[in-house]
Image (cartoon, rainbow, N blue to C red; front, side, top):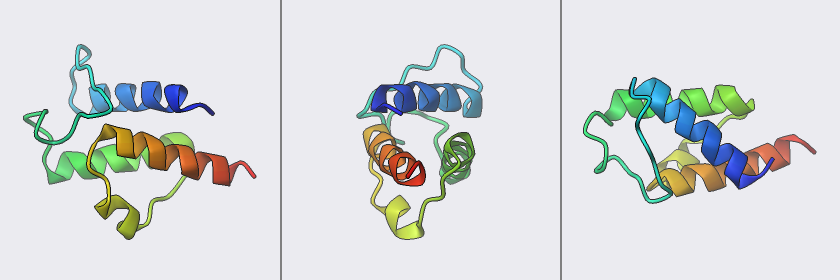
Length: 84
């Protein structure tokens, strides 16, 4: 799966979590850019990404995430490793 496909799926997840079909994220989007992105919504985003791709993140990996681009990169690595 390509990073573009993962990004597009994560875009949909963000729209679902924040209940905003017009929400547009970028690789640089972080919690400072979305008013309702609090700790609970962060957990909802991570959980939805794990479910969408059939992957699990370690706590140490989650701590290192700074923005959407980091989420895409980490999900991509996990998806590739899961498919082998």
